Image 1 (cartoon, rainbow, N blue to C red):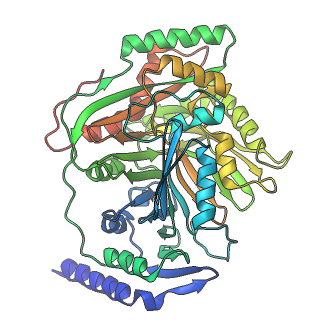
Image 2 (spheres, rainbow, N blue to C red):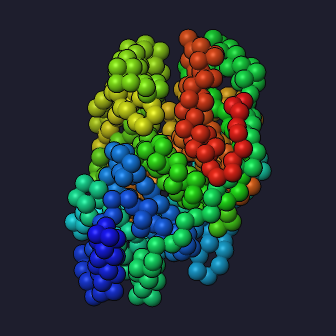
Image 3 (cartoon, helix red, strand yellow):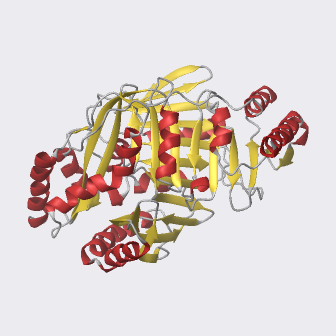
Length: 493
């Protein structure tokens, strides 16, 4: 009884705060900031917002023990950009326009049109209006000068909205706020507040698998592709190639249900839920930061080297020690560090790029990883979007050298990677950017759910071990989907 009374009192307190919300908004430069009740689990806020058009969630999963700090969520974008192959469609208040220009340039133009660049006015929140969404791997073809691949999928290569407001949570300060720019009128603010003060929504409809997972590279096909990579390595075409398989299964239901179940199993600091308006969705549980720009500091954190967590503390320490001692995994990591140093150097002051950490151990819910940290100082007159474009796609999911590795990936992987191995995140109008590498990422296209697993292949890689690693990385996702209500028993390919 006491617990229920406490819940009711907390709910009444929240409603009172929201009811007086517009009068409590305070100005900070060109921003209006409304303090909100902090919730340990940001999904409690987003569950009320997700029915609004264009709702997006960048999730630190702090409630389940991930190491992230901020949750960022928004809805009601000022405009949206979607790219399929060479064509980008821009949806804005006056209708649709289409362009075959560079999508990064189109996004920069959309930001300038709707949210002109602003200086940081001392606001403590990292997102102060800007772009949120995904940049799919296939978008990297344009960055690398490669021919766009045929695009049979409904899910776009790029889906980014320009947002004039956001709800943010800081799990270190245990604070939350809605940050509004001058592009948001009172009617939109009231619509947001009405959503936030609404009663907790009903649980989502179960997300259910309607059949077994099937791979586009079964064990035999993977072996043939692996052998082909080894020939390229021996011939000197490349030093490393990241080869991935895609597992697909028919499914129906609400992807939000799948997201809530999976995030509890795979707590990762760079998670995201990005629904489409046609039943599709991108669900990401990535542990890997791609590019972050904060002030003049540019940072990337590539992951290479993975080991399963042990069942006991002793076994877990043994697994971690073995990974740290693995010459092969360290060699893979160092190759990508060199690649990312070169990529960052294209946007940083000469001589400023450095390796802050090399092959450091980081542990997550299901695996240990080797993570390196490379940073640099942003060059004058260089935007955060330019940094992202010049590094895209991330070297940790292509191989080295990047363009040749991408060509080999095109040759050997039967299907496009969609959002997988692209980047998900935000760029704020005041220059801050943070993105993940979209690994441990699922795409639901409205009819099927797709899950990818991959790994870097080098000259001394073992074929069977590499194949097992592609499944190890996504096993928690597959098991979590299998646990859905009414799901059939699955078999691995």
